[in-house]
Length: 268
Image (cartoon, rainbow, N blue to C red; front, side):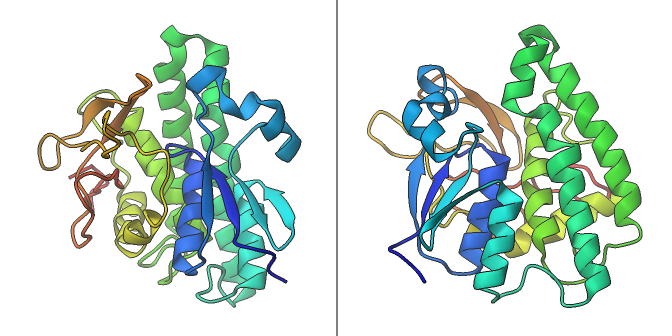
Protein backbone atom coordinates (compact mmCIF):
# COMPACT_ATOMS: atom_id res chain seq x y z
CA UNK A 1 0.00 0.00 0.00
CA UNK A 2 1.21 3.47 -0.86
CA UNK A 3 2.38 5.41 2.20
CA UNK A 4 2.62 9.05 1.13
CA UNK A 5 4.19 10.26 -2.09
CA UNK A 6 7.34 8.36 -3.23
CA UNK A 7 10.63 10.17 -2.59
CA UNK A 8 13.52 9.79 -5.03
CA UNK A 9 17.04 10.62 -3.86
CA UNK A 10 18.77 11.63 -7.07
CA UNK A 11 21.57 13.56 -8.76
CA UNK A 12 20.89 15.30 -12.07
CA UNK A 13 23.88 13.78 -13.90
CA UNK A 14 23.63 10.29 -12.43
CA UNK A 15 22.72 7.90 -15.23
CA UNK A 16 21.42 5.41 -12.65
CA UNK A 17 19.05 8.06 -11.27
CA UNK A 18 18.13 9.02 -14.82
CA UNK A 19 16.90 5.46 -15.53
CA UNK A 20 14.57 5.64 -12.56
CA UNK A 21 13.28 9.12 -13.43
CA UNK A 22 12.33 7.85 -16.89
CA UNK A 23 10.53 4.83 -15.41
CA UNK A 24 8.62 6.98 -12.91
CA UNK A 25 7.61 9.39 -15.65
CA UNK A 26 6.55 6.72 -18.13
CA UNK A 27 4.41 5.10 -15.45
CA UNK A 28 2.99 8.51 -14.52
CA UNK A 29 4.00 8.16 -10.87
CA UNK A 30 3.92 11.42 -8.96
CA UNK A 31 6.90 11.69 -6.63
CA UNK A 32 9.08 14.11 -4.71
CA UNK A 33 12.81 14.53 -5.18
CA UNK A 34 15.63 15.05 -2.75
CA UNK A 35 18.77 16.22 -4.55
CA UNK A 36 22.00 14.54 -3.46
CA UNK A 37 24.94 16.44 -4.96
CA UNK A 38 27.74 13.95 -5.58
CA UNK A 39 30.42 16.65 -5.91
CA UNK A 40 29.43 19.34 -3.41
CA UNK A 41 30.82 19.34 0.15
CA UNK A 42 32.99 16.35 -0.67
CA UNK A 43 29.94 14.43 -1.86
CA UNK A 44 26.62 14.64 -0.04
CA UNK A 45 26.18 10.88 -0.50
CA UNK A 46 28.80 10.41 2.24
CA UNK A 47 26.73 12.23 4.87
CA UNK A 48 25.59 10.21 7.88
CA UNK A 49 21.99 10.96 6.99
CA UNK A 50 22.28 9.49 3.50
CA UNK A 51 24.43 6.53 4.60
CA UNK A 52 21.62 5.57 6.96
CA UNK A 53 19.33 5.53 3.92
CA UNK A 54 21.74 3.68 1.60
CA UNK A 55 24.90 2.17 3.12
CA UNK A 56 26.46 1.95 -0.37
CA UNK A 57 26.46 5.77 -0.49
CA UNK A 58 25.10 5.81 -4.03
CA UNK A 59 22.10 7.29 -5.82
CA UNK A 60 19.37 6.58 -6.60
CA UNK A 61 17.35 5.50 -3.61
CA UNK A 62 13.58 5.45 -3.65
CA UNK A 63 11.26 5.57 -0.65
CA UNK A 64 8.01 3.99 -1.76
CA UNK A 65 5.21 1.92 -0.22
CA UNK A 66 6.82 2.08 3.20
CA UNK A 67 10.21 0.70 2.11
CA UNK A 68 13.45 2.11 0.73
CA UNK A 69 14.96 0.57 -2.40
CA UNK A 70 18.42 1.27 -3.79
CA UNK A 71 19.97 0.05 -7.07
CA UNK A 72 18.25 1.38 -10.17
CA UNK A 73 17.30 -1.94 -11.77
CA UNK A 74 15.81 -3.24 -8.52
CA UNK A 75 13.75 -0.04 -8.32
CA UNK A 76 12.54 -0.38 -11.92
CA UNK A 77 11.68 -4.06 -11.39
CA UNK A 78 9.68 -3.17 -8.28
CA UNK A 79 7.80 -0.46 -10.14
CA UNK A 80 7.10 -2.97 -12.91
CA UNK A 81 5.70 -5.53 -10.48
CA UNK A 82 3.56 -3.09 -8.52
CA UNK A 83 2.60 -0.65 -11.27
CA UNK A 84 2.75 -2.69 -14.49
CA UNK A 85 1.30 -0.10 -16.90
CA UNK A 86 2.89 0.70 -19.25
CA UNK A 87 5.08 -2.37 -19.12
CA UNK A 88 8.84 -2.06 -19.29
CA UNK A 89 9.46 -5.81 -19.37
CA UNK A 90 8.00 -7.85 -22.26
CA UNK A 91 5.46 -10.58 -21.59
CA UNK A 92 7.43 -13.10 -23.65
CA UNK A 93 9.96 -14.79 -21.29
CA UNK A 94 12.69 -14.90 -23.94
CA UNK A 95 12.41 -11.19 -24.67
CA UNK A 96 12.17 -10.48 -20.95
CA UNK A 97 15.47 -12.29 -20.45
CA UNK A 98 17.01 -10.30 -23.31
CA UNK A 99 15.88 -7.03 -21.76
CA UNK A 100 17.51 -8.00 -18.48
CA UNK A 101 20.63 -9.12 -20.32
CA UNK A 102 21.04 -5.78 -22.14
CA UNK A 103 20.19 -3.83 -18.98
CA UNK A 104 22.79 -5.73 -16.95
CA UNK A 105 25.39 -5.36 -19.70
CA UNK A 106 25.07 -1.59 -19.39
CA UNK A 107 24.37 -1.31 -15.66
CA UNK A 108 27.04 -3.83 -14.58
CA UNK A 109 29.48 -3.99 -17.48
CA UNK A 110 29.84 -0.38 -18.65
CA UNK A 111 28.50 2.25 -16.27
CA UNK A 112 30.37 1.21 -13.09
CA UNK A 113 33.75 1.36 -14.88
CA UNK A 114 33.26 5.04 -15.74
CA UNK A 115 31.44 5.98 -12.57
CA UNK A 116 32.64 8.94 -10.51
CA UNK A 117 33.92 6.75 -7.65
CA UNK A 118 36.07 4.69 -10.03
CA UNK A 119 37.37 7.68 -11.95
CA UNK A 120 38.61 9.21 -8.71
CA UNK A 121 40.75 6.11 -8.13
CA UNK A 122 42.56 6.21 -11.49
CA UNK A 123 43.81 9.78 -11.12
CA UNK A 124 42.60 12.93 -12.85
CA UNK A 125 45.09 12.70 -15.72
CA UNK A 126 43.86 9.19 -16.60
CA UNK A 127 40.13 9.66 -16.13
CA UNK A 128 39.01 10.41 -19.67
CA UNK A 129 41.20 7.72 -21.24
CA UNK A 130 39.98 5.15 -18.74
CA UNK A 131 36.33 6.09 -19.23
CA UNK A 132 36.58 6.12 -23.02
CA UNK A 133 38.21 2.69 -23.10
CA UNK A 134 35.56 1.23 -20.79
CA UNK A 135 32.71 2.70 -22.82
CA UNK A 136 34.18 1.72 -26.19
CA UNK A 137 34.77 -1.86 -25.08
CA UNK A 138 31.27 -2.09 -23.65
CA UNK A 139 29.63 -0.50 -26.67
CA UNK A 140 31.43 -2.93 -28.99
CA UNK A 141 29.94 -5.84 -27.03
CA UNK A 142 26.55 -4.14 -26.85
CA UNK A 143 26.53 -3.58 -30.60
CA UNK A 144 27.00 -7.30 -31.22
CA UNK A 145 24.29 -8.15 -28.69
CA UNK A 146 21.74 -5.75 -30.16
CA UNK A 147 22.21 -7.21 -33.62
CA UNK A 148 20.20 -10.22 -32.45
CA UNK A 149 17.69 -8.45 -30.18
CA UNK A 150 16.89 -5.00 -31.58
CA UNK A 151 13.85 -3.90 -33.52
CA UNK A 152 12.84 -0.25 -33.20
CA UNK A 153 14.29 -0.40 -29.71
CA UNK A 154 16.88 -2.47 -27.85
CA UNK A 155 14.63 -5.53 -27.70
CA UNK A 156 11.91 -5.69 -30.29
CA UNK A 157 9.59 -2.80 -31.00
CA UNK A 158 8.59 -1.67 -27.51
CA UNK A 159 10.41 0.60 -25.07
CA UNK A 160 11.79 -1.49 -22.24
CA UNK A 161 14.06 -1.28 -19.22
CA UNK A 162 16.97 -1.83 -21.62
CA UNK A 163 16.23 1.47 -23.38
CA UNK A 164 16.05 3.23 -20.02
CA UNK A 165 19.61 2.04 -19.42
CA UNK A 166 20.91 2.77 -22.91
CA UNK A 167 19.83 6.39 -23.33
CA UNK A 168 21.66 7.76 -20.25
CA UNK A 169 24.73 5.68 -21.09
CA UNK A 170 24.89 7.20 -24.57
CA UNK A 171 24.68 10.63 -22.93
CA UNK A 172 27.58 9.62 -20.65
CA UNK A 173 29.58 8.44 -23.65
CA UNK A 174 29.06 11.76 -25.41
CA UNK A 175 29.93 13.76 -22.30
CA UNK A 176 33.14 11.77 -21.74
CA UNK A 177 34.21 11.65 -25.39
CA UNK A 178 36.97 13.84 -26.83
CA UNK A 179 35.57 17.28 -27.56
CA UNK A 180 33.60 17.35 -30.79
CA UNK A 181 34.00 13.64 -31.58
CA UNK A 182 30.94 12.23 -29.84
CA UNK A 183 30.40 8.49 -29.57
CA UNK A 184 32.05 6.11 -32.06
CA UNK A 185 29.84 4.66 -34.83
CA UNK A 186 27.75 1.65 -33.81
CA UNK A 187 24.92 1.32 -36.36
CA UNK A 188 22.49 -0.85 -34.38
CA UNK A 189 23.22 0.82 -31.05
CA UNK A 190 22.92 4.20 -32.72
CA UNK A 191 19.53 3.30 -34.19
CA UNK A 192 18.22 2.01 -30.86
CA UNK A 193 19.43 5.03 -28.92
CA UNK A 194 17.96 7.34 -31.57
CA UNK A 195 14.53 5.72 -31.32
CA UNK A 196 14.46 5.23 -27.57
CA UNK A 197 14.88 8.87 -26.56
CA UNK A 198 12.05 9.95 -28.85
CA UNK A 199 9.72 7.93 -26.61
CA UNK A 200 11.36 8.71 -23.28
CA UNK A 201 13.22 12.03 -23.43
CA UNK A 202 10.16 14.17 -22.75
CA UNK A 203 9.12 12.09 -19.76
CA UNK A 204 12.61 11.85 -18.27
CA UNK A 205 12.51 15.56 -17.53
CA UNK A 206 9.37 15.18 -15.46
CA UNK A 207 10.81 16.19 -12.09
CA UNK A 208 14.49 16.28 -13.10
CA UNK A 209 16.38 17.80 -10.19
CA UNK A 210 19.58 19.59 -9.24
CA UNK A 211 19.65 21.21 -12.67
CA UNK A 212 22.48 23.72 -13.09
CA UNK A 213 21.02 27.16 -12.44
CA UNK A 214 21.98 30.78 -12.64
CA UNK A 215 22.32 32.93 -9.55
CA UNK A 216 18.61 33.71 -9.85
CA UNK A 217 17.71 30.01 -9.84
CA UNK A 218 16.87 29.92 -13.54
CA UNK A 219 18.09 26.75 -15.35
CA UNK A 220 21.16 27.36 -17.46
CA UNK A 221 20.79 26.78 -21.19
CA UNK A 222 23.29 24.03 -22.06
CA UNK A 223 23.48 24.75 -25.77
CA UNK A 224 25.12 27.65 -27.51
CA UNK A 225 24.26 26.41 -30.98
CA UNK A 226 21.79 23.88 -32.34
CA UNK A 227 23.36 20.44 -32.21
CA UNK A 228 26.79 21.65 -31.09
CA UNK A 229 27.83 20.11 -27.76
CA UNK A 230 29.85 22.32 -25.46
CA UNK A 231 31.09 22.22 -21.90
CA UNK A 232 28.97 24.12 -19.41
CA UNK A 233 30.05 25.12 -15.93
CA UNK A 234 27.51 24.49 -13.19
CA UNK A 235 27.38 26.77 -10.16
CA UNK A 236 29.63 24.27 -8.36
CA UNK A 237 32.15 24.44 -11.18
CA UNK A 238 31.33 20.90 -12.28
CA UNK A 239 31.55 20.83 -16.10
CA UNK A 240 29.11 18.85 -18.15
CA UNK A 241 28.49 18.40 -21.84
CA UNK A 242 25.06 18.93 -23.31
CA UNK A 243 23.47 19.16 -26.76
CA UNK A 244 20.29 19.87 -28.65
CA UNK A 245 17.26 17.57 -28.29
CA UNK A 246 16.73 14.68 -30.73
CA UNK A 247 14.46 15.23 -33.70
CA UNK A 248 10.79 14.87 -32.95
CA UNK A 249 11.14 15.72 -29.26
CA UNK A 250 10.22 19.12 -27.90
CA UNK A 251 12.53 19.85 -24.96
CA UNK A 252 13.11 23.40 -23.66
CA UNK A 253 16.59 24.68 -24.40
CA UNK A 254 17.11 25.22 -20.68
CA UNK A 255 17.02 21.47 -20.06
CA UNK A 256 19.69 18.85 -20.63
CA UNK A 257 18.84 16.22 -23.20
CA UNK A 258 19.76 12.97 -24.84
CA UNK A 259 22.48 13.25 -27.49
CA UNK A 260 20.83 13.07 -30.93
CA UNK A 261 22.17 9.99 -32.72
CA UNK A 262 22.03 9.45 -36.47
CA UNK A 263 21.32 5.97 -37.95
CA UNK A 264 25.07 5.63 -38.54
CA UNK A 265 25.62 5.83 -34.79
CA UNK A 266 27.24 9.27 -34.87
CA UNK A 267 25.77 12.24 -33.01
CA UNK A 268 23.81 14.57 -35.31
